[in-house]
Length: 173
Length: 238
Image (cartoon, rainbow over the protein chains, first blue to last red):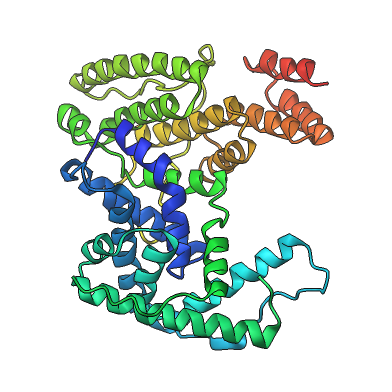
């Protein structure tokens, strides 16, 4: 356990990162808030033994991932795929930029929801958060080859899904 | 090293990911809400204060006061930081006082750890309202609340609101005040809460509601020491 100063600084600096990572791993509403609390509680407990040379964000991502994985195992029924029954926001022909942005963000959300959590975590961590694959492999505790394999499969899924959405809904992000 | 990255992203996928990377982050209210929950579950509790005081109720008072001071020093600007530095010194003095208090058996009165206003007239003891974590996912089991814990919880929320107001962060102030209202509807720092709530209303441009709330406050607390503070709010308002 670090000092209150250290822990508060950690919280202030990294809360936005954790908040968005949890959403990208499929949590929203009260579940996201619960997991944000649990992520920092776990991080605070480990903080005194934390190696300062280790980058903080990937470490926090690893904590988020394990918490989300355990949570999903307990509440499996809530995370069954909803496939395409969730519609994209309507877009008028002369839509404003904000509407296009909303539609694009929704496409990403739907595409990520199509992936299983293992692939999704690698994809989010590398493609969206920008962490190198060796770091991804270390923080998610998987062999390097497994991380690369999951990345390849996740990219394939993502490409296919957004292309389908794009054609079927006429989206133009 | 295997670099099996043969599958590459399409330009559509890359555009979407670029969009996702700019997704809006949490609101100040989100950040504040989770922070409050961490405080309530003692997630910030350092081992040093616990070991040196050795009484769970008092420990929580000391820890949370120090924590509140630390929060202020970190998030505030120079003025707020200086204010909280003073509070940190006060908190250290509180530790000494609380240690002394523990040596005297059956000492009922717990010193106020946060109030910065002049001492209030004696008020009836606050009802022993339970202060609990709002969510079932508390990392550590909540400890039973002593009176001193309730007071420190109250004080922590009031401090959060005060700090937020100093930063003109109205949503965060409102969140802390709402939480105080929900947890301590008849707490010992109701007057502070109500005055700050009026300040929030003024900040939001809801002048009519602010004036109505101020009239109610004057009626309910005719001898409140915070009346000059309240009056000054309306003198400053355009």
